[in-house]
Length: 471
Image (cartoon, rainbow, N blue to C red):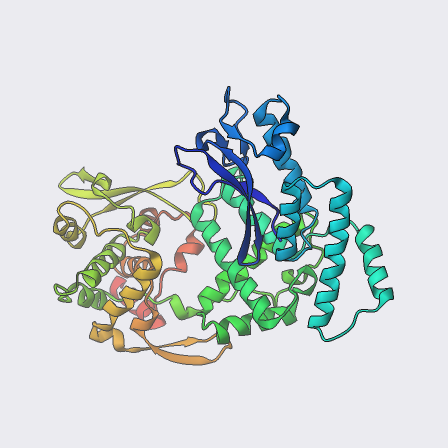
């Protein structure tokens, strides 16, 4: 479980707002108001505390805390109180949500240490009894005594897998975790959250009790089966979730939290598939370009965005950021100049790419009054792109791929198109035209030739034809 944190619900309000304590329980969240109010501009949302740099921060304490403050600096007193409350909660993370809420309220009401200790023991024993009844068994007196003994003499705190993942993501979101000194971008943290959600659902749906020690090949096979059969994920999506899980496990191993290295075995692999690796031929691109979508502006805009990608090689994340400022005059024509982003942590040393605007891209630019199609989410783009692709007759031809279980399946080509297909299409068609590889890589913002060849989708027959043309 994640550690406790504090926040304001209206961080931009001009009035004093209550400081809330939050605690995540899987996909649920426990929220309790502390009764302390602070003016949002005097609240440090990153440190979760009252700003001490402000001369006279506007803080309102409940009656039971006014006596304790007794003329002390209000910011320091409040921060010390919140830290004590956080420590109090973090020491009781084993409690159920309802009991935890009761504990927090008791603390906020100012129970004495002895009274709180007695409440803790009572809540702990009540939880044991309730849980045993849920399991249709009666807990014995000896078991109760032993459990109470273990409670009063706990072992060193042990971080479980889900606790670690939550901390890992929070540290990535707030800038505490860096990669090569660079802050993790928002897109990457969204990927982390998505994988976390899938793991939680797998754990709950299968009552798996997932933790570091059970992440082995048995888990791997069951997790893959779950994503394929229950979720219906494509191999590439499953591969991303496995890759992200391995990122969590590697970090936990580096920190000494995880001792189980089964995830490093060859069998515990990131799934790859040809499912999303198609590139459109120039004829297929031309068919999409010539579609009459005047009566469907939604699909028209998506088609135009794909056309730009297929003629420039830009990533989807760069396509949605294009504006008139990226268009630069060059000789007798125009170029697109953009600081291209890359995957993973997307370092600040981003590469500048310069791409000539051909007639197709220029036509779209003028179509949008010296601009480009408006931004769209990646999910909606992929969904609408398939609708567009279905309208092209040549994309109804079939394509054979391997499914997650290694068996062949046949699908129409339109069903395999995604946001990344335009980038593969650009690389493949430019290569077929004989454009120097280094020039294509430069326009795509690539420096690794091995990565580049992953984008070129040319059959053996096509390679032979390329050789024939050169001869």
